Image 1 (cartoon, rainbow, N blue to C red):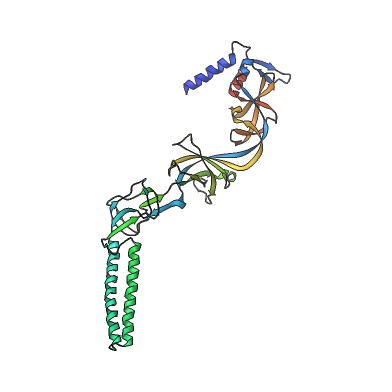
Image 2: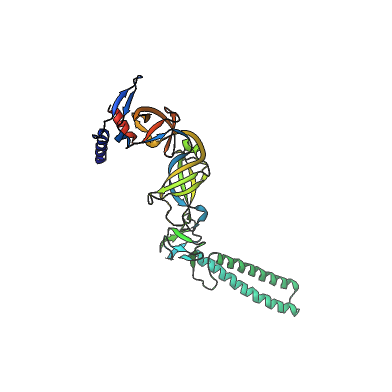
Amino acid sequence: MRKNILLFFVASAVWISCSSDKKATKQDDQSGKTKLELSESQMAHIKIDSIRQQMMAEQLTAVGEVSFAEDNVVRIYPVVSGTVEKTFASLGDYVQKGQRLATLLSMDMSQIQRDYNVAKSNFSVEEKNLARAQELFSAGMMSEKEFANARKDYNNALSELNERTQILKLYGGSSSDLDAIYNVLAPRSGYIVERNVTEGTQIRNDNNTNIFTISDLKVVWVWANIPESDLSKVAEGDEVQVKTIAYPDKIFRGNVKKIGTMLDPSSRVIKIRTELNNSEGLLKPEMFASIVVTSRQRSSIKAVPQSAVILENNHYYVMRDLGDRKFEKVVITIGKTFGNYYEVSSGLKIGDRVVSEGSLFVLTAYNRL
């Protein structure tokens, strides 16, 4: 920092002196205003720009973070209690729909399988009873009422077996493999972005913590925090530019998709959301982001380049070109910021010419007069 300051003063002194040419001079006009006259060599180091009316879009800078696209996220919660026997997927793995993620040794699963076996056994008994009743009824050795009861018992047993079979399938069990094992399966294809279990973890089905989260991450959401005072400057559809610490030279572009309806009572901010294409997989959930929102609405403003404006003693100044290499220091009032331009509220008029590059050096030379 000290080196930069030293270089600035050295460069300023060399630029102002320009020993091979006429030095900058002070002139006072009849109104008593001080003017700075630059030499021809000094003029070669500055650029002049005109104040003009421009159609500009207002920009708003905010901070935020990258998040999952909730429309493409599946969170897997435990549906049975038990102990994790083995895991088959790690954080960051890509899994296919139906792929086994983990197995649990579960008393709940054991009970489901036991109920299935009981229903299957009862059905087998009632099936034989109905066959015997059919023979007796055909031989006239059983009344119609008794035969109807036998058929009713068979239908009840069949209904119970079907129900227990559906429950077994729902919990991933198999009628041919009754081993008290519950298989955690991937309900969709995507990346494992959260894994909250390891082998030996005790699972309870009344726990509200998900054990796996799957997302394809091809699309991510970025949430930005907008102060209450700036909410009127944002609308759905506004252009959004996102930068991250990981990729400072890369700009991700999107649009405002949703504006929150609830204001955070402590921070007084409201969240806005944009969706970004993440086909390259660069953006990761929880990344911090710097967001610039550009309004779709355009305003006609009297614009001055930001590079022309200098803040000095809590006032904004520009160096106005008077022609014939003469300049004067002018205090201005600025309004809103539009990209690389300020709105000029007072101090300049359309057509005025100001120093747009090298303004700090010119103002320094002026102040030394």
